[in-house]
Every structure is written in structure tokens, then in C-alpha cells.
Length: 252
Image (cartoon, rainbow, N blue to C red):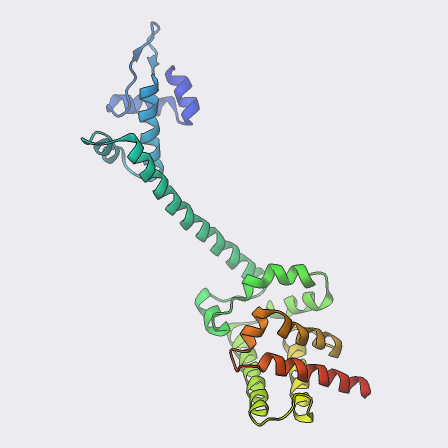
């Protein structure tokens, strides 16, 4: 192949090929009658190896030292290239994922660093479930209202929210420890506080919507596991108290 054809196929300039020839890194087998450099399959294979190394960020002097080292084999080198590229691609994909999560978090109002989010949410990453939440409730007024509110929340706001939620959990756990039923007046009153808490921080939570949330707390293993971190059985107790409180509200 002529130098122009090789340059086009390799995606590099003719000038680059001329430079590789001048420094003895990739030289053609000869020249045509018209004086053009002519490359054989062997030359092109060597060029491919050089370009692999360049893709990994290596300098030309280091590349030449490697490929001219006694015992150098093309197959072993290609396997090494593959392993390095796989590792590199994993790092790049992780970076892309981090960028996506960061942009998503900013768009949804979680204006905190990763460390702050871990601190506030105890390792629970709300962004991880953002796509699912948008798929479930994206068209609802509650979803839009919640997004508007949380868009202005600072780290301190989230800590205050979390503190109020923990206080409600502790009240319910105390009732559970005392053997008080979930449909008792005391438990229903705390369930009502829970509904008001959601209305205060996120969206207008009606008793009917609250019942739906309570059901999700025990039917979705992820929510149940997260709630039960505060105390085993809390998710079920809260769900039952919410249902009882909703029934009480219908009775007036």
C-alpha cells in the first residue's frame, strides 16, 4: 500500500508516517517507481502495534524500546493491550456514570457532594432510584411539587428533615417496644405526624396517598430494608399505623 492509503486506513496523517519512517519506528519495505513509500502487511502490523501503544499514552521512544526488545511477541503484546484497554474502559465508564449521577443530582436538587450524600442518607443513594421514581410518578403533581421543593434544599435542610424523620421512627419504636398496637390512638397520631412531615418537606400527602406509601414500605423489599434499619419490623408497624390512621380520617 502507498503511504497515503495506509494513512487513510490508520486514521493518521501522511506526515506522521513520514516521521515514523525518519526515526526508524515504522519504515516501508521500499518505494514505488514514482518514489512513494510502499508498505507491506508486516509494516502495517508494526504500525498497528505502535498505534496501540500510543493510545495508551506511551511516548515513541518507549514504544520503540518495547517492540525492539528481544523476546517481544505480537500475540502477548496484543493480550496486554486488551487487558489495559479493558481496565481503562472500566475507569472511563465509572467516570461517565459519576458524571451522569452528579448532573442528575443537581437537576433534581440534591446539591451535595458524594461524601455529604453518604453522610445525610446513611449510604442510601436517592439518585440511584431517580429514574424509577420518574417512571412511576413523573407525570404527577406530587412529583413536580417535590422536585420544586427539594431543588432549594441545602445539606442542613436535609439533615433537619432526616432528624425529624428519625424522631418519628423513635416514637414508633418506643410504642412497639411497649407492645402498643399499630392501630392504637398513639400509633395513629404518629402516623399522622408522618403524613404531615411528608407534606411539609415534599408534597401534599393526602391520607389516600399516604396509604399507598405505607403499602410500598412493605411490598418493596428495598424500602422495607431501609426503614427496618432503625428497628426490625418498623416498616410493617408504620404501614399498619398509616392504614389505621387513614381509616380513622374517613370516619371523621
